[in-house]
Amino acid sequence: MAFSAFPDQKDNIELLQNSLARGRLGHAYLFDGHDLAQLEAVATTLAKALNCENPPARGKTGVALDSCDQCLNCRKITNCTHPDVFWLRPESKSRIITIEQMRELMHILQLKPTQAAWKTAVIVAADRLNIQAANAFLKTLEEPPGQSIIMLLSTEPDNVLETILSRCLRLRFAGESARLRDPAFIDWVTEFSQRASGEQGTILNRYRLLSLLASRLAETKTAVQETLTKRSPLERYEDVDPKQRERWEDELDAAIEAEYRRERADLLVGLQWWLRDVWLSTLKQPMTFSFPAAAESTRAIADRVSPKGALQNLRVIDATLRLLSGNVQEALALEVGLLQLAL
Image 1 (cartoon, one colour):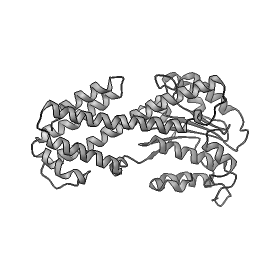
Image 2: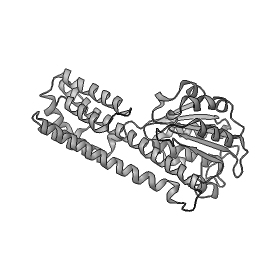
Image 3: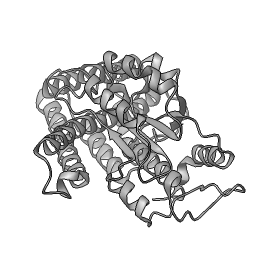
Image 4: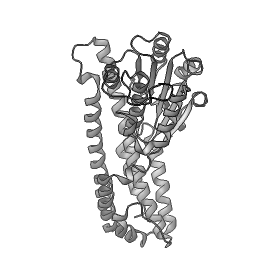
């Protein structure tokens, strides 16, 4: 994958390429955005551009501005097997990046590159750094070894410690509206809206909506498991050290849980956008629907809900998201939330 694969992130990509061209790349970046897979893809592409053997584009000084995606270094980086590109992910059951992991990363960064020009570290879900790990990492983050770059990735940057944020150059990769353009999600919201508009306030109908939401989440979890399992080194390497296999298994479990939680929150935020349409419709003002296909059923609900009740719906989703960010039982939090909605 080359930088051209990110047309929606033109400004950030140009900034990175200009920094490459001037030889003034930052020593530490925080990439934050809505899509963790996209953040990982950008980090991978930057790592490849730094170490590509046959770059398709160079700056005036001869510095590589992109990657060929075909040379040995590019292939190794893509497959997460390059010895000079280190990926750090939450691997404990609590999805925390521990101080032991961080010490290993700091040791690796101090070693000279073996096959590439740059030593690269990518910390996935940097918001999961515990305080001990973060504090141990501060000096390295502030003054990393020469010819090294550290990239921290997060879909929840508000949870990244301020001491970490202050030591990174932050690039925000927009993508909040991507869900609103997803045809499959639009179809699902339209179906949810139509069912909600036909409900007569009975408990049975409300539980039908809950069943629709639960089915969507089950499909999401299955898709996350399949996608991340295919990406895992466990699928590519059978004969590995048992300790390494155990580490990869822990990383995979933590990654699946984290990505599912992110997509679950993403789904609820998308649902909140539809409830925003309902609220705006109750105000009887000109508006542009986030989900035009659901406009008729949205208006039908708005005709029987007060503006106050519609606004409260948005707060209910906020409260549900906060509950789900902890260790509350998912089914119970969703049930309570849906039963509180004014529809």
